[in-house]
Image 1 (cartoon, rainbow, N blue to C red):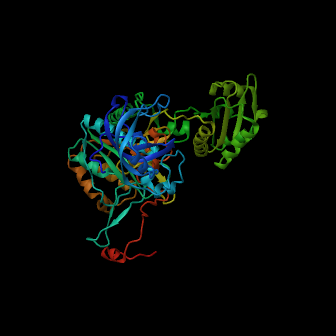
Image 2: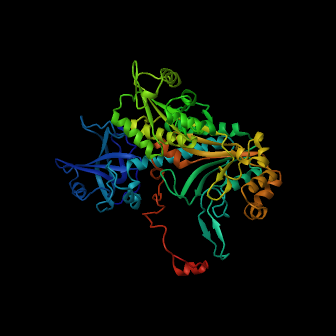
Image 3: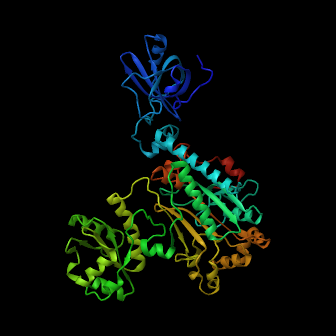
Length: 588
């Protein structure tokens, strides 16, 4: 028989429902045959309910149940019964009950699937993405997608409560420089011309501020043709926010409120406010990276004063040549073997270091690869600088500033993985502010925007636009969570004269600026208010909250790391007819 309607989900029934007649529908998760009885774990997105086929009570239905295999889709009707003593399952929300099946309908069958949905063991990623509809049935992926939906809901609730309007912006736009290659879409109606898919809704949200919608947000789809990695996809989603008549602190306060609300609503975790802040210069100087993970310490300390008169040539010559000497402390790692310490040195060399020097502090002495070069006062100064305890390890690099910072930035991450310092459930937010407005592009001998071309300079640095652009700091900010750049934002340029000056510094002629951004420049003349915003990455936020290592595990249908879709085969070739309609000839 075909059942009229399911009465409950597979995660809904409790002991209070005992005696009820119910209809459940779902997938066969597991099957067990025990002494004539057949037990099926029936699964849907809400959970699992055990259903029982008893040959003594319903012989015909029991025989039909003999056909059932994993991932068959079935409907069952029966009575909710208590589980016998001793087989209650406390791990299941439905673990106190089972359903004695009176009616069974097999809605669809399933061959042996390439992914075992009931198993914790995952196949390779290509298999998972090729059969994504099966992979999405697994408990882990169901949990991640539900988490994503809950985060999105909490976002919409918070922003609506704070007066923001959700407004959609175009997907087919013109090509603008935003740091990555555009995905281009040829136009049939305008042969030889192309739309671009938006890398972000940047210009349109600024135009909405000019239009008087002073609080906008959008769960925005963005597209960037760039090299893929764990936290990048060709298409991704960001929580796009823009506000008028604000200063930097207003945007930061609103973003902090959003993040704390999401964590409280979704994970019931209280995130302390305000979030700590570091300038870009401080982040690089202390951690060697502009998105430091502050769940662990290991800050770099400058040792130049301690070693400027050292007899050790590697130190003295570094100082003389304008380099720096810095060190980090690794608590409690002094018991590492000599081989392990030598391995650390080799790892640093692989990263580009000349050498990594180590010092182990014991109860009353030290062990070190450079012990013979260390004076008693050097050792005392190091103890004070790092507040060392017995069994602490200090690692030292001496080289050019950029090399020391880069290597220690990478080395901190390596050590946390090596030592297992990070545990899921520890979330530490950080603001990095006062980035440079511009960066010098050595390959093309030009000045580029550090973030994007629409970021306002700090008011106190505007004077340097004419004299020393690389000295100008931006009114920008990055939101960092656990060493991941969660989102960037800035106070925007709202005056045409400043925007034109920034374009000029970047090498755009007024003619080029007018072609690409003429509509924005004109809009800035028509009463553009001061405004700013931020765009946290939704995929990255879900990844971190789920404890996953890649955003591919929190997106329903992602691409591979090579931007390929094993499920649909995209990208694919298209017919000559389609190319002809677009006036396109291939040269491949």
